Image (cartoon, rainbow, N blue to C red; front, side, top):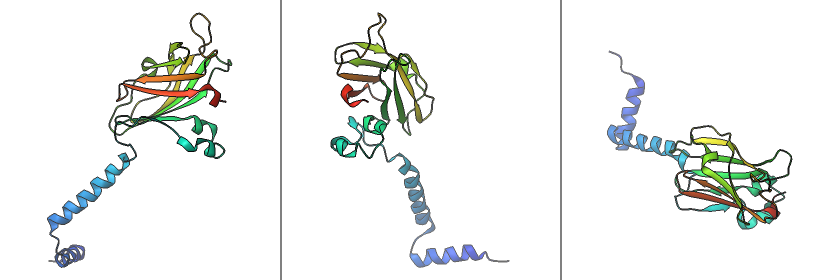
Length: 186
């Protein structure tokens, strides 16, 4: 009967290290579990609010980052990180105000219609619901969230406004609010 040299080697290592086979198995299991769960570690604890990418150093970093990243807003409530970037803010070319929205999670199904959960308002009190969402489903979703540029009576949504406020409801948090000063949007 032939003895397997690999098995013999591991038995010698285990016996000389003072570890039992059971303890070695538990250590390997803990290591593998930590490695698997580390993929979720980039999501902070619930309760954090919206932040401006670049924070206080926005003006210092403006030349180093593409304009879209400077305008991005991040909301990390619950188990979902939502990043919103204005893409087309009322230039009149296609009658649409457009935002790029990216959602990431490892525990929530993101197959929802953001057009039904979102509205856009101005500091002057004008508010419109979204008209379309192009995102998909899963745990990592990106898409475009579009709003009409004009109210039903033909008034521009933005007009003389100085600020726009995007509100998205019910994505693992009751409400997520993203605010931009129109003067900062090219």
